[in-house]
Length: 145
Length: 313
Image (cartoon, rainbow over all chains, first blue to last red; front, side):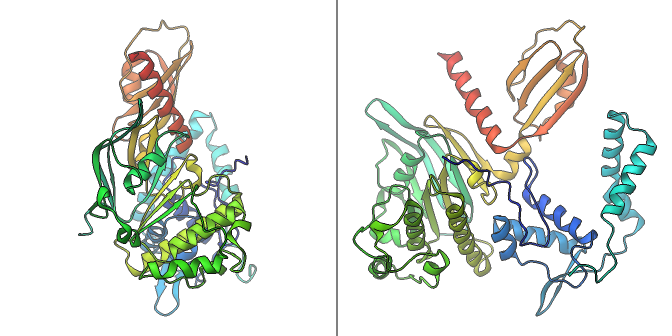
């Protein structure tokens, strides 16, 4: 008998890749993967975002979950709906200082805690951050297509 | 029947074969619009439960309602609203796929096969007896999806299928769900799927119930289940003397060595795990709490229910 993990779905059809991890709600994971693709420029502003049906089919997720993902991304300002066209990637919103604090506060704390637990010093953590920052920085437009 | 009526509801439903209790009294609610995964090992009682719900078997005690109707009163007419796909389905072997579909069509007022055969890559002119197991499951699914029932019951639809066929079946099912979702986002079709392998359904199931040796261990939404269980590893100072204590009932399968205490927390969302651990265990150095795959959750629950049965015996 073949045993294959169908929960680890990796797809190239969608403009982002995703392997589901256990213990985290699926919608959160898809929102994260899409956000990552948008900030990294794999999805450019104005580009069409997959429909509920495409997300559901390709990731094998419930349509309700797919809908939740798109609603969340619309609320986050990462997508916008254009009548007659569908949902497209928005220009990255300029966030306010409060928004930034709210969004990143817990994550930064988590990072600091982890770093201290592993006895990584401040220099180590900043250079790790800048490496990742460069990796995810939008390449000059026109490059990918 | 309103949208609030559950698709399926059982009250004390049980089945005994001779001296064997195949299904202990079961109370279960399957909400409308849910994709409800019924999981359990072979012989756990999944098929028995499904057959009771569909009036193929009669309960020893208790009752069930299916789409608002008593399961004991389900007749031919009711099955124009309920689609049933089973791994042991009998087919008119001598018919071609197309002939079988033509034969089924007049039974269902809502029949609309559309491009289903092509979508599922089914050869219309091939005789059913010449089809592989995977193809037969696709035929079974096509004949159910074609009449768009508000309730689809699938008994082990994916067992023994290769990943490609399984993928096709899941896609066809999701397409159907998407159609329903677009037509009526608030109350889509209800799908009950039994499986011994949750990995097959966990990405699109909304609810999951686990049957073990005829007993329901739990039934709840996927989101709460995922939030509830954590695998906790506590590192202790080995030089400290260990004191005995009684772990809370929400801690499953506790195990310990001199420096490590592990358990599975079954209520990690509501209880403060770290506080609990620190108040009960002396000299805690580190607490690690990891999310669990559903597979490991099930194994843990099955093992801990066995442990309880043994301690009672």
